[in-house]
Image (tube, rainbow, N blue to C red; front, side):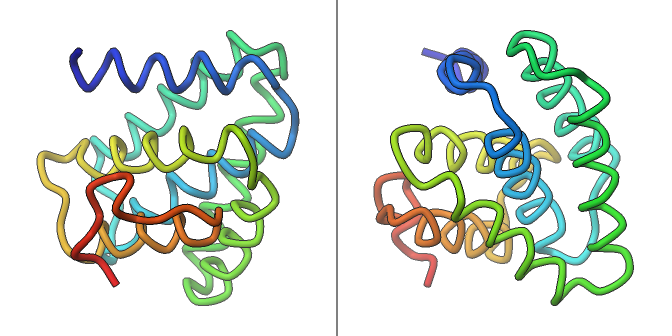
Length: 145
């Protein structure tokens, strides 16, 4: 199974329960890992937007609500990264439950979109995992603290 098929399967599972909590948690997780190394590459941003748009279009929530969540969180990270991270983790925590693992998988895929998955991005993915009550090791994040 390719990484894209796994990512598509995770998105499909999330679509089964579309609501604002899922949209905000997915957006927050993606932006947490993308911002972890201090910058969001063009490819990371493109992948985030593609996945969020695909989620919104397939899930039923309207695309405008999804893009509003993305823009608001992006502005938070641009203005105060520490506050943005706390707010993003709170949005992630709100999703704890059956779909939580999918959010971590998608965040990891976004982090790797620019061709690498550096230590800061791995740590952000591990924080997301722990915020959801999941062990980072489930996602190959054993070495992250």
